[in-house]
Image 1 (cartoon, helix red, strand yellow):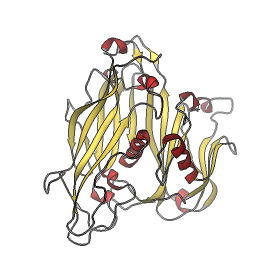
Image 2: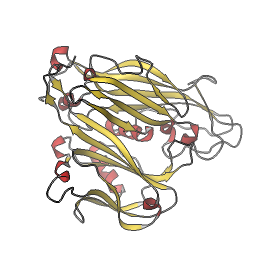
Image 3: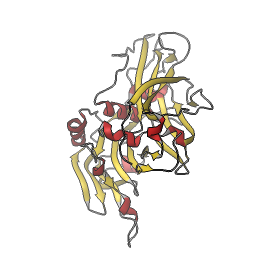
Image 4: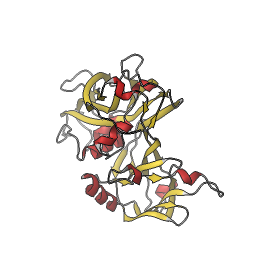
Length: 371
């Protein structure tokens, strides 16, 4: 599908608010929770705001590893694509990793409040943070992004699901703060959801089906992370598509409410000699130190965060540089190994989370009209 001119690539337009319900999946209050429109989407902007009031005594003394972003346990976007005739969950991340992706896209940490948290007894902290949910690949030129917009009219039952966590996920040891509305001692936090819409006139979208980027994750824990080992095979990397990039996050898990997940602290001392192998003993990427991945992120994206590393196969914004994992699922010998390996410094409660940015569908022309 050839790129086409747009009037606007990502115009902000508020959709609706989603109220806080601790440890509960929630949807937009619009036509059964659906994202309903006749236009294509570049992405969503989710602004979460509220107030955290510390207990009078025995409260927390710090935020946990990913801080206030852990108030969102999970974000998913999914629907049934009419042309491909399949159900697609193409965005499925926890709030912490979604926040990191937002900052990486923006080349800097997005604005957030408060600038400094107070943990003294009965202190109030009005908080606000932003998560961008992009549907286009990371770092490609604006002229190529129309080929990867979300073709909303081609989906049935397209839904954003925001699964809330609770204050236990956000703060360390101690009695959890009380959560209320922003600037108020009553009410509840909320998420303001806006669309970043593409505009070009209906005729420009006819007979086009954009490519689709899938962002999802896998977590590794247990003996693989708690036992020291050299050259440990940690996880198989998905095969059969184009791998745009991989986020690797390491740290220690926090004790949370059942069903939730949070990191107490992040660390870059767990892994050394990190390798991506295409076949046994055939590394195609090799970093002696995890911090070196962050150095690459600074060079290519101008942003990094300790504990996170974005393994960027197309760091120059050229999607053709994405790792082609199609041939790894065929051949006379069956599947070819494609996996992540590292030396592990084992310790209790450690875990690693891998987020995949995978191009599963390339842009194509279609005889189906995008309404």
